[in-house]
Length: 308
Ligand code: NCD
Picture 1 (cartoon, rainbow, N blue to C red):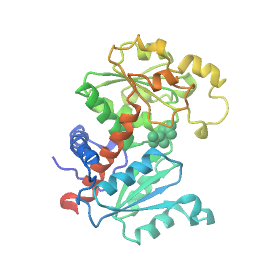
Picture 2 (cartoon, protein in one colour; picture 1 turned 120 degrees about the vertical axis):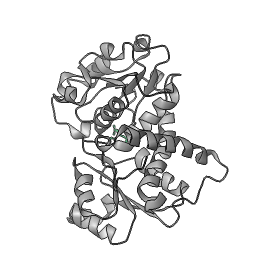
Picture 3 (spheres, rainbow, N blue to C red; picture 1 turned 180 degrees about the vertical axis):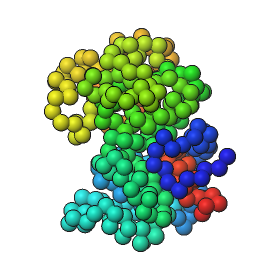
Picture 4 (tube, rainbow, N blue to C red; picture 1 turned 135 degrees about the horizontal axis):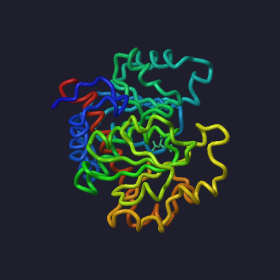
């Protein structure tokens, strides 16, 4: 099995075998991060550039760490301090960055489709680190790896994804990922945050958190993407928490060995109670650890190996 893509734009574009290949490779890379010397020469002489038009804690940092663990050079553009503020277009910015000869550009952008637009125009690889409310493929891959490690499989599981589905690129990438790997996804949220096409993606849809978590093997909680929504989607945060916040009382409805995940950033006390976020079923920090390994694998397939 080979990975033939120039870019990683979305989970929708990947075959299950390609997802499996990335996860297996990521699992084998995990060990590098606990060595006394956390570095291998695999991508020496290669360069990764990150261009984030939206804030990020985990994604950008873990891409940079992933590149460094594989000995690639890294350069990040701080958009707020760049000529983007002087009116430079996305295409012009990207062509100028490409003129400095990176091997791969990692981009996060508020517009859905921005990485796809660049992938068509640039010779270097493009990785989507989150485009608007569309996809966030490396988040789904790290979520898949976390579930695979905890459950020993990715098929036949009941996955509940709860919260602001409408504005969540994580939800969309995870629906693609988990259904492609043979699990069954139920999404739950207020009706205003459930777009009409979810069933066509293969998900079961409900407005009841209780229904979604009943019998679940995995519960993935999502943040309200207040920065992407206008008025009128929810009444008050308190009411949202009462109906869609995950609390200890909900866990007994799920499987005994249910795992709780969240892509971060958490809004503690809104979509997830601190007791659950920090409790024994939570794998939230393991997701972050796996983020480095998955991004190492993605970089390896896009700019390493025989393509290098
Ligand atoms: C997510 C994102 O940016 O889409 N965060 C992440 O990458 N870990 C989710 C969010 O912002 O709520």
